[in-house]
Length: 234
Image 1 (cartoon, rainbow, N blue to C red):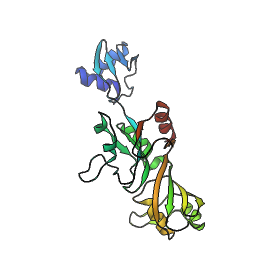
Image 2 (spheres, one colour):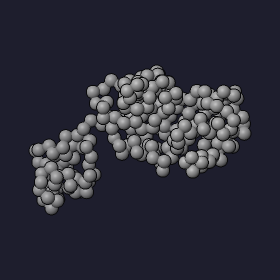
Image 3 (cartoon, rainbow, N blue to C red):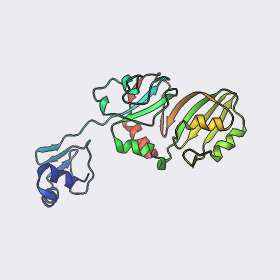
Image 4 (cartoon, rainbow, N blue to C red):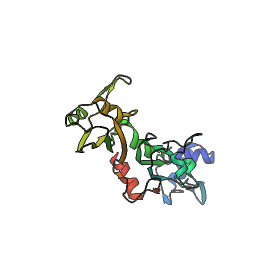
């Protein structure tokens, strides 16, 4: 929303009167005088007119969680525990998930109530890299590296997967970097090279990596630097 529209709607003064108030330096946004009526504001923005608070900011939340196997990437479920059940915060009901994981997959999950931030990370157009540690039933064949780089055609969706980087770690382990998130994509890709995924763990999303000291089931708030780095990476 633009600043002039917010002021006009809150004060019922109309857009012209809102522009005059802004030009007269009567409006502060997050404590700073703003004279541009097109200045963007959202529900996390504090807006004041003279001595009156027109909009008190909502609390913006940005979390990372180490999802264990068996937990659903959902905010509500009647049968199974969800990632939201692991979070102890009074405003957790406002959160949504930025990048889900299958119930049988562990690793990094991001949660936020800032839709613009999560959209930057998760839309296919942004091609934010997601890194997975994969364990397979059989040893990963060297030929799989080139196959993953070429991409696989999925007839159900009528798409070809984007080039993916597969690094062999020896034996039955590999590290896979994707730039998209199709349904059961990792399992389907390994099935195409005659193998089966038995363990899958997401290590990072863009600039955000799961810390080694964050145990399964634990969560923490992102730092301001991490929030900014994730947005810049997208």
